Image (cartoon, rainbow, N blue to C red):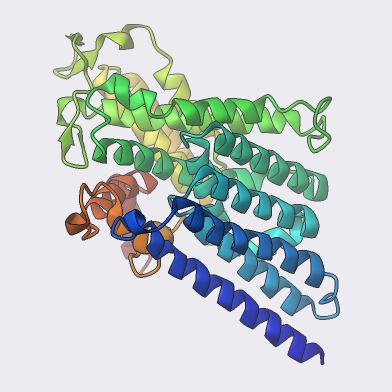
Length: 408
């Protein structure tokens, strides 16, 4: 009887997944004129409500079979991840995020992390993306989900280091993708407009940092310093992406659009032929890059640490600070030396299928398209090619390949 129940639950989740994939087709421009937006919204809302009901009614019932219990949570969270990755209404995104938060509170951090496994990086991608949503309610719900996730993880495990490092590893890709999406829609023409496109994300991260243990029982008083450090590192990583774009100067291209990163005024360093923005006369770019690099531990995330140190080196070189650039290379060497004994534990982020595969996420073909005839997925490929360069820059990939060749 238990096996029958478990198989029925699995089939029910598969039906919900099939419904979600089918409903995504309704976001296509050729269907929208003939369908009510309310109907499209309610189809996804029904799936989110069914997910909550499923977990509430079946989680304890399946306690005698931990494996099947975990599989149910895994499939349910994967289903909700599909929903929040699609360009749906704010109401639908709120319902799906609320369902995910409900699952997290129901099962706890240990079961949640076991269920999402390597998909934790994809949850980080979507949470950061929703923090940059144009809807205030969606941003607030993404902040709430983040506080719940870190709060429960800290209460059950005593630290948030692993989760924080995974989230920060994928943040550069998220930032670059958000910039590329704005550019694909013709909203970025200058360095100023580029920075404005990230203001919602910065504000949302600041809201996470402001979570007060006196007002929120999810936040332990001992968690606040770690949460503050995480949020400061997030802001530093966002700064780092903007710095890497500024270092490209007038050669910066975002989804086939040229963006002048130098602005109207620039100056040339006496020891360097490169022109630099005038705003760099008084800045904290070096501190931001060093803070981003320092957050990553050589024992577990040496590649991310080296990535930001190499950007710091490029910045010093652009400013003609060659002694500082040499010292940065020494820090890179030290990172490699400290990482060698732990090389088997190095984690690297992977690409997100729901952002790249048109067979899984059919709505990707509509990105940047002015009419249904343009829906070939070309713009999305350009967006993701730009974003992937910030997930693992070409210089970092060449370093990994070179190391692999020497190892073989």
